[in-house]
Image (tube, rainbow, N blue to C red; front, side, top):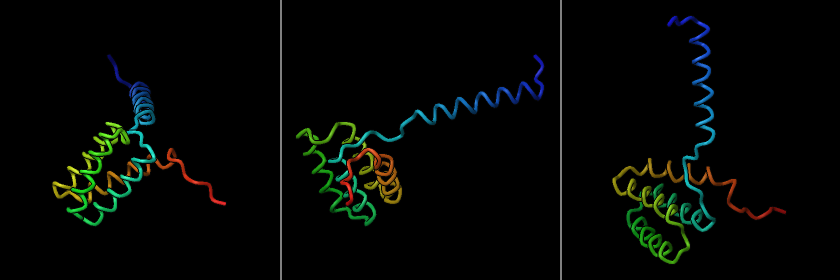
Length: 115
């Protein structure tokens, strides 16, 4: 098989389009309810302050809210992943993750109209 510049360019273009489609359709963060958004906001504050005591309190609260059905399994698991990151001392990574999740969801969470 002979690979000329046109063939290589066409193959590269096809791969680029495929990667763009996959990137556009993927959703790196799970959906978030308005209740979960409030807990994520608290988790952001806790991680930003490196507050180990409050981190344990919110972990307990999340377990209770999950048991009550106020948070979905996916929401709870994602927040626990962030909590595990913070517990391991990677506070900045935890802050980035929770912030990205919140920003990703901001357009989906009901925000009161400003008048």
